[in-house]
Image (cartoon, rainbow, N blue to C red; front, side, top):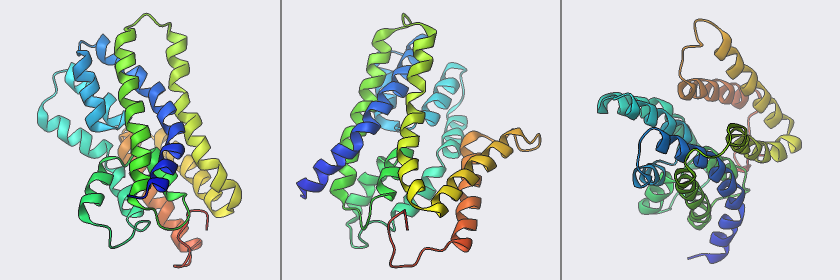
Length: 238
């Protein structure tokens, strides 16, 4: 066990923990408002770790959606994690045992992917476990606190809590974008393409999760052709 890497993972995961707390706090409040018990809400957060998937799932539960509808919705909303996992497979030691890959895959989220992908060199499993040890409790504890708080908080405070996740995304994206123009171009292009897909009448009906997949594949594919990274360069900033 590489405790140094584990502790570094916890340290790097603390910002994720705080951001997750704010978002899952809102989920917990909404879950209680819709009639779920505290235990049900906490178990959903502990076993899912996906904000979009959980909010979509909660809507289906409230509206009496079936199991097949729930499965298809979760598959589409969370399909982007396939791409993230494939990308991170290039960041780990190819000899890493299967059980490490199995448990690490459970904790792959947008933010954990961002932190791991931006780390230089190969990423040891202990670092992933450190990130997960910080992020998962933040997500779960935030849900529990949201359930306990009920609905007594004012609406403007709830909205402010929801903005924390965007600040966390900026903290992940800005450092590598400032160092590498190619990364900056990819980020800006992804934002513009996602916006365009959201306003074009024919394409605006596509779910946010599937739209993200289309944007990721398109922008990453174009960037790999126009700005290829040499094989020996394994970090995300080139």
